[in-house]
Amino acid sequence: MISLICLLLISQGPAETSNSRWDPSDILIEDSLGPYVAFAADYNYTTGDIYVACLVDSGYYFGDHPGWAIFRSQDHGLNWERIFSSAFPQTDWDARDIDLVVARDDTLYVSAHAYRKSSGHDRIEYCKFYEGPSNWVYSFLNDIQLSDAEIRSPKLVRDDFEPFYLYSTFIQHYDGGNDLLYLNISIDKLLSWGAVEFIGSVDYHDCDLTVSDSTVYWTYSFFQEGAKRIRTRVYRDRCFGLDTNAMLQTVSDTINANVRYPRIGATTTLPDNGQLVYTFFSQKDSETGNWDLLYKYSEDGGINWTSTPDTLRKGSKSAVRSDIRGYEAEPNEYIDITYSVTTSVPFMGYNNYFRWSSESDPTDWHDNINVDGGLFGSVPELVYSPGAPGSGAGVVYNDYNGNLWFDAPWLPSGIDEEKDKVAGKINSQIVLAGSSVEIGSADAIVYDVTGREIITLNSKFWDLKDGKGEEVKAGIYFIIDEENGYKLKLSILK
Image (cartoon, rainbow, N blue to C red; front, side, top):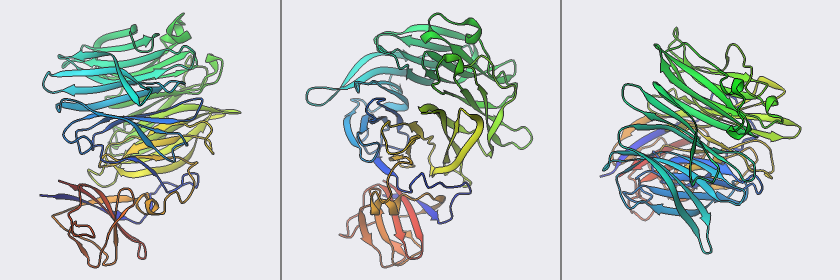
């Protein structure tokens, strides 16, 4: 039996502005990774190569098994190759989260968060992937396993020294509070961890971590004395020789019962006390019931912060999640942000937007680009590619069916004529159907997610068979009639 979720594609564009820097063509990295695939992106500072690491959901990629998949682009995101894939031997793993760090020798350091049903363990596994004599190799380094607590918000970052240090944070959550929040450092490339800080005795909800030069910025949200609060700490000198005043500096002690998703990013200006630092968070308006995306910033490396938050986005129906990252492009420093806002149609996921600001004016946020709409719970990951034919960030994101895509302002027009037809930016609404689907055109063409033509239709019904009369496989399909602008996206599940 085939069930069908039918997504009607509306030709109208998003209310937010588009921008010619972002070509309408997106690059498919890989399809069928499962609707709950966890992914992370990073890049080699020297070569500009981009890597994406996936903790594959137990969907169609490995059958019933979850597993690993690693992808690389050596031409600034235009083409992608799978360099590693391996299914887990057991089927009872649930993918939760993943983070990725790329060293200059193209060794990949990964933290993968999963839950194993048979043992009841929540687990973070630290490992590395590197290119061996004949193929890419996976190497397990160490892990954290908890049977009596939930792991929340694991993050992994690195500084840019040689030898580099790695830093991690996560929450050890217990029912009823009394959580533990960790900030750890590894000076031996994940072979061992040392605790920089661990604090407890309250209910922690989320945390984030970034490094700029030798300063580590750490932000987290927690529930205490009847309110949710957000706090940021600043650690100098790679977490050694700490500046106590900076370390204990508070960004926001917001007295509000509805504050979520703190995220932190910083520019790379030297010295450390000249860095521009942002902390973003989502806060619910008690009067309207909507969620706003707010931020505070510091222009002196985290010592002094703006007294009241500024607003980047107002009026979302649910809490706004974001990804923020800084980069240097002479003669200025920039901060990029992507954020996800619920669509106007219930259960259809998120519209995802990209904006940027420069050090010259911390509150002047340029562009307001809908990177892609109607995604299922995805926040695009920002990633850079030095040497690309254009500045700024690219993004990696997943759609409803677990297909990974790449988009960047430097991609050339007309990458793939067929792919252009199926990768437009569109809004959607849900319609339920059975083993066939009624469409609004009798002269449409059906494409699969790669842009390959499946069948040309001559009626307003499609029986889910290809041109040879064989039943199509589960996956995403597009029905296009370019003459009248009709577009229909189908997600078929067996």
